[in-house]
Image (cartoon, rainbow, N blue to C red; front, side, top):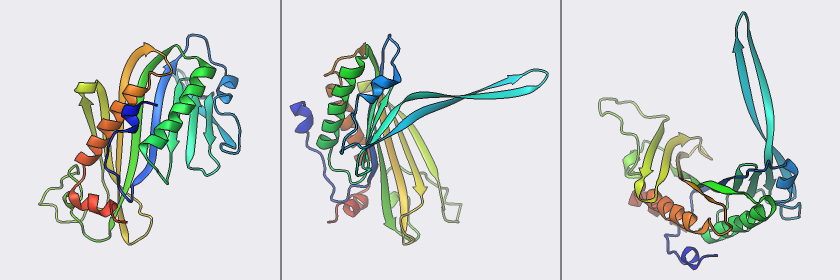
Length: 252
């Protein structure tokens, strides 16, 4: 693993608000991939005892003298679920993904496991090209229940006209931001979601960044793009928060 990745200094929060971290590389291969090949990426073990088929459904509607619709399902891969239900490997015909669910540890551990599964995918599938690198971090902030001002906790939020006196019970905000310096695209989503208990207000902050590429597939090709994605994800995350929120998630 790259020293530049393992030694990057970032802010560590005692109560990381992460619901799910996803690392992904999208690939292609000229020779058709057989579904059995994808099973070999993560052998069944005590660590990953369960596999789930990944299917994609598509539909077709025909309009003529009458209207008819058909639907088909395509088997595109497998999800391998860890014994603790806290890690999921997505082994697919179009690439590899890795999800880390609570309790999140740190980037080094998550990236390290993703890298190991990528090495296995590369060895078993031998993809020809890589077309995208991506990360997605889904966070939930639990705020004290009551009438709150979003700008007390976030620097990115929907602003409601002062002429609207009623409280805001729900919202969904999506921002699409081109990151020209690294030729990437970021999507930030923010929403109010059901809280884990009635004495809280929960706000979702979902940050996804993707770098589209067209390069030959190499086993070490993920290192630098993932480093860039991590850095920019952290910058966007910090840019969205007010000091009060940092204090909230940094209390032991």
